[in-house]
Image 1 (cartoon, rainbow, N blue to C red):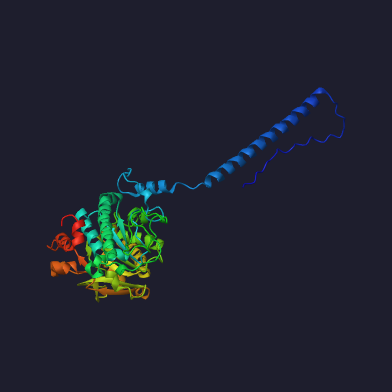
Image 2: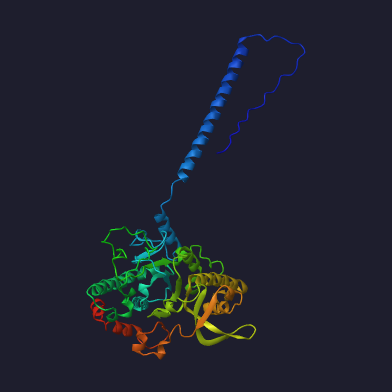
Length: 443
C-alpha cells in the first residue's frame, strides 16, 4: 500500500509594518475570509476524493490478481502458438484428457504405476505405416506390461496425423487384454500366451495409480479398464503424447540453429519431462521411431546396473579423435539406462549441442551430427565420473542377417534399408495365435 503525501502552498507573510493598525471589520475582509475558508474546504475535499479513488483502484487491482487464469485455455492457446503451422482449432480438444499438469494427451490410462518409461520421438518423416508397425511391435514386445509409453511429436500437425492411429491400435491392444484376462480366469496356462501377454504371470500388482491423467475415481467400473489393480490379473502401462513445444516452449536451440532438427531438439525436451517424473521411474529408454522397432524388452539389461549406468548402441565403425586415437561410433536411435544417468546425459548433450554451434561458423551450424556429439560425450573422461557408459554392438540387431522367424523373437531391430518386409513378418507372427487372429485385421 503506497503512502500519499499532500503538499499545501506556503503562506507568504505580510511585510512587517512598524505602525500597527487594528484592521477594520468591513465587508471586504469578511468576504476574503469566507473565500479563503471555502477554498481550503474545496481543496481538502478534492484531496480526499483523489485518495479514495487511489485506494479503490489499489484494492481493485489486488482483487483481480487473486483470480487464477483458465489453465485449459492458456495451455490450448500456448500449444497453438508454438506450432509451426498457422493457429487453428483442433477438432478434438485435448484439454479433456491432459497427460500431465495440463500438458500432452492421455491416450490410455494404465492399470498401475510403472517403474520403466519408454520415450519415443516422432519426426515429420515418419509415415503412418511405420508408426503403426512400431505400435504393434511395442504391444507384442511385453514392454506394455512393464513400462509407460511416451511419444514426443515435433509439431501439432504430426500429432493430428497420428492421433486416430494411436487410439485405434490401443483399442486393439485393450481388446486383447480383455480376451486374455478372460482366458486367465478360465484356467488357461500362461505358457499358452504370447510373450507380450505374459503379464505379471497372473499375479496381483499393487503399486499405486499411474501419474498420468486425472486421478481415477474409486468404484467407477465404466471407465476404460481402470479398475483397481487388486481385481485385475493383467496390468499394463499408460500411453501418452506431447508436442515438442510443450516440453521445450522457448525453443532453446532457436538462437543457435536456424532450424533445429528433431534429432537435436529432442534433447531439449528430455530435461523437462524427466524433471517432472523424477523419482517415479527407475529406468528410461530413448527410442527413434523412424529407426528402431521394439520387439522385446531391452530394459532387462539395465535392471541390475546402477542408476547412473547407460547402455549405448555402438556400430562396428570407428571415428578418429583429434589426438588420433580411435573410439566407437554411437548410434543414438536407442539408449537405455537408469533414470539418473539418462537425465544427466540429456543435460550434457544439450550443453554439447550449444557448445558445438558456438565453435562453428554460421554456415556449418546446421551440419551438426547427433551421433558424433554423442560419441564425444561417451569418450569424455570428466563426464564418465558421473555417468557409467556401457557400449554394446548387440543392443540393436541388423535385420539383414535375420530370417522371418528370428526377427519375431528379437529384442530391438534396426529398420535400415533391408528388403525384408517387417510388416508382413510381424503380422504373420501375430496371426499365429488364435485369439490375436480374431482381433487383428488382415489375419
